[in-house]
Amino acid sequence: MKLTFLGTGTSTGVPSVACDCETCLSDDPRDKRLRVSILLEHDGKTILVDTSSDFRQQALRAHIKKLDAILITHCHVDHVFGMDDIRPLNFRYGAMPIYADESAWKDLRRIFQYIFEPSHFGGGLPQLIPHTIEKNAPFCFSENLLVTPLEVIHGKTPVIAYRFNDFAYATDLNFIPEDAMQGLQDLDVLVLDCVRIKPHPTHLSLQEALEYIEKLKPKRAYLTHLNHDVLYERDSKLLPDNVWFAVDELAVEEV
Image 1 (cartoon, rainbow, N blue to C red):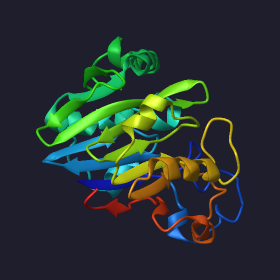
Image 2 (image 1 turned 30 degrees about the vertical axis):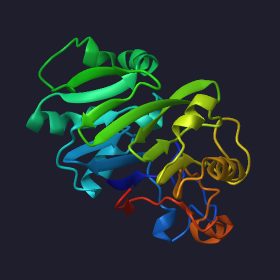
Image 3 (image 1 turned 45 degrees about the vertical axis):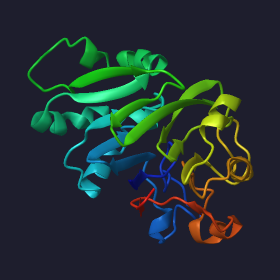
Image 4 (image 1 turned 90 degrees about the horizontal axis):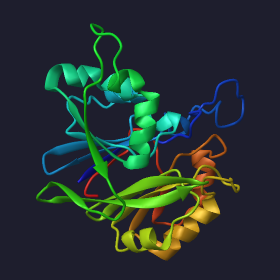
């Protein structure tokens, strides 16, 4: 399985508009972060997790030519506002399978009412094939790719983390319930939320993320959804040997 980080930044992206902090002014490309999203390639399938606000830019940068499915974690702006930019893929390949839980589908139908209740035609609308998932209910994309949705908590908002075989992606959270903790055991790679060094009301801080990693004991872990408090070169020194800050365009083979 190949993992590509399309974006690793928080909702404002990094650099942040009108900010002149050390990270936002950094010349280090590892401090440039589009909104958070990943691409997975395995067993002949290419899967996108979240259509971030920067999806068009990410797709062009990563040379995405085709997607087999899109998985949605939750419906905050930075995770879904790129949905309209799947249209060029629809033009070539038809409707796109989209997987989300019932709560997310309720929000998607509200946010993108023009897709589900079109009032005009001719300009081209995103074409979706909706699939409703449930937490702790695994499903298969292929014979060798098992996906397990796990529910984590982002402030008061339930968010879906996804386990793909022995890799898991858990972004936008500040608490992992016990059933999800069980579902995140025995991982080769874990990608985990870590918005900044200091505590945050709805995201994991660095210390909290490292505490979860210590409990879950994945072989490798990458921290994502980073804001401009995280300066890559300086703050990487705070990490254990098997933990890294994720960076945009990083490709991890043999996940």
